[in-house]
Image (cartoon, rainbow, N blue to C red; front, side, top):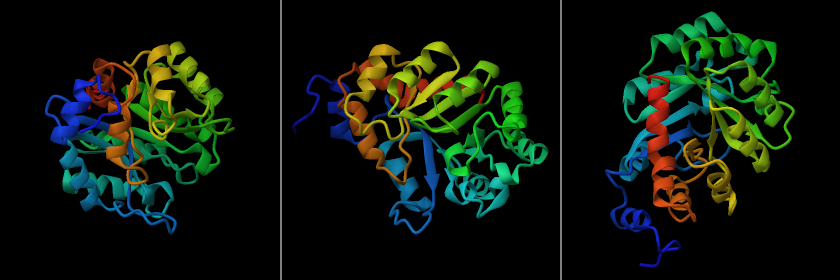
Length: 271
C-alpha cells in the first residue's frame, strides 16, 4: 500500500485497520438530515451512525439542520435523536435569534448534560452578529456554567468574522469558544485568536481541504487547541481523517487533533 505520508506510523496502522483503539475519533462539528433540497446520502441517522461506529468515533457533536433552519423549534430534533440513540452522539443547542427564549432554552441545556456541550451560533445564516444583544443571555449563561460555544465563522463576515469572535472572547473568558471553519480563508486571523485567547479552539471543519492550512496552524499555534470536525454529512469523515493522517505533522500532533484535545475539552466543560 502507498502512503502519502510514509513517515507516519499512525497513518499506516489506521489505514490497515480502519480504526484504532488508541486513536479514537472526537468530531466536534456535524449535522443531521438533508436540507434545502440538497442530496446528502448519509444525511440521516442510520448511515451516520454506521460511519461513526466503523471509524471508531467516541463522540460526534452535531446540530440538526431542522433546528438550524427553524423547521423544528426548541431544538427538539437534536435532543430527541441523542436521547434515542445515545453514544457517540452529543449535541449543541441551536440559538435562533428570532425565536430566542433564554430562560427555557438554557434550562433545557442544564437539564440534559448527557446531550448538550453548549450552544451553536450561526450568525451568517441568521444575519445576526455574535455580539448582538439577543445573544447576550446565552453568552452569559455559557460563561457562568463554563460550557462550549460552536460558532460558524467565515472570512470577512460582518456577523461572525474574526473581529466578532474577538469581541466575544474579550468578554467571556470561561466559555470554550470553538471557531468553526477557523474564520475560513483568514488563517492569520485564526492564528491570532488562538494565540490571544486561551479559551479559543480552532475547529478544522472545511479547513482540511485547503493544502497547507493545518500545517500552518500546527507550526504557528501548536496542535493542542485544534479540534477535528467534518461537517458530516456535508463532507466525508474518512476524507477528514485522511487529511489529518497524511499531513506533514508529527504523529503526536495527529493524536492531539483526532482525540486527545477532544478528551481534554470535554473534561474542561465537565461533559
